Image (cartoon, rainbow, N blue to C red; front, side):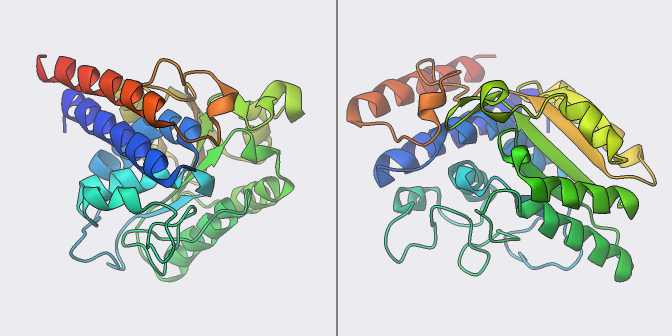
Amino acid sequence: MNNLELQKIANEVRKGIIISTHAAKAGHPGGSMSAADIFTYLYFEEMQNIDPANPKNPDRDRFVLSKGHTAPGLYAALALKGFFPFEDLVKLRKLHSYLQGHPDMKATPGVDMSTGSLGQGISAAVGMALAARIDQKDYRVYTLLGDGEIEEGQVWEAAMYAGHKKVDNLVAIIDNNGLQIDGKIEDVCSPYPIDKKFEAFNWHVINADAHDFDSLRAAFAEAKTVKGMPTAIICKSVKGKGVSFMENQASWHGVAPNDEQYEKAMAELEKAGEELCQK
C-alpha cells in the first residue's frame, strides 16, 4: 500500500476517534490521534495474517495496546480493517457495548489482549512472543506504549526480561508525544533518555517519525532484520495530531469534544481528506 493510501486511512482513523469520543462524551482523543498513523501502518501494512474472517488465526501477528486508554484509535483501525462496522464506533463506552473504554479481548473482534492498567501490556506481549518460540511459530508481536506509561516500573521488568531472553520477534513502539495527563513528561517524571534506557536493557533501538510513513516503513523493515534482541521503535509524535486545537495540548489527554468542537474537528478532517483525494 502506498503512502497516499495510508494517509487516507489514517485520516479516517482520526475521524473515527472524534466520532466515538464525541458520542461517548468521554475517552482519550489526544493519545489516540498521535498514534493514528501507527495503528494504520500496523494493520494495513505491517502485520501479517490479519483477517477479520479468521481473527483467531494461530499464525497471525499479535498486537497489544499497552496504553489501553487509546482504544478509540485501535477501534477505528479495526473497524476500517473490517472487524466490525465503522458505524458502531458511536457505541464507545456505552453500557453493554462491545467497545468499552479499554480493549476487551473477550468482547471485541480483533483485540488480542485486554489492557488498561498502564505498564502491564508489554509484559503480556513478552509472554506472547515467547509463546511463539515455544510453539515454533514465526509470528511477530507488537505492543504500543505511551511515553508517560513507561514511567511504570513493570515496563522495565518486562524490558529486562525480554532483553535477557533475546526475544527478537517482539517490537515495542513508544508513542513519544511528550505529554501525559498531568503535563509534559519531562516535568512529571522524566523517562528521558528513552533510547539509552532500552539499549541498557539489551534492546535494539530505532528512532522514527510517527507521522511519516516512509520513516515508519524504514523502522519496521529494520526491526525485521534484528536477531538476538527485541526492538524498540521510539516514535516522535504530536498529541492530538490532525486537529489544530488539540495538537500539543495535554488538556486533550482524556476529554471528549463537545458539539461545537466536534463540528470544528470533523470539518478540519474532512478538508484534510479532500486534499488527500486531490493528490
